[in-house]
Length: 167
Image (cartoon, rainbow, N blue to C red; front, side):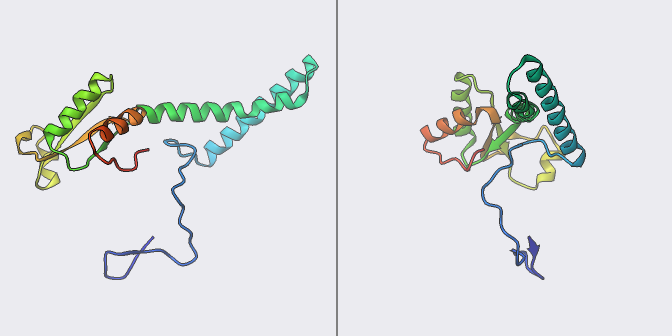
């Protein structure tokens, strides 16, 4: 995206395509050249070991070569576990009491959820004073782990809250 001249409007550069709603197959990991090389090397080593093992056992070599996907599956599995433990929040403009009620209902379903009050005023004030008066808060956000997104989405729909596009 390129910012147009003097306005705060962003323009799409010509010739570029927008990536649709596609998400990367890795949610938290971003592999650089070294990471991709290591993953490819691990796949090649596992495939070579698989071919050697299946040849020694008299099985088809293709079965051993299929083991090359094991490192990729392991990386995806570790990445999804890490993503599920990360916390995120959703804010729909609900009152502190409403969000606290939903958080209590989620706690009854064994979902760890917290209420994060949004205090009006400049954001630097909240950072500078971590013990600010939460009584000033008018709205709040619901914080939860990404792994609990299905339960949170269901609970928000029960309360007639249209959740944003949750991951």
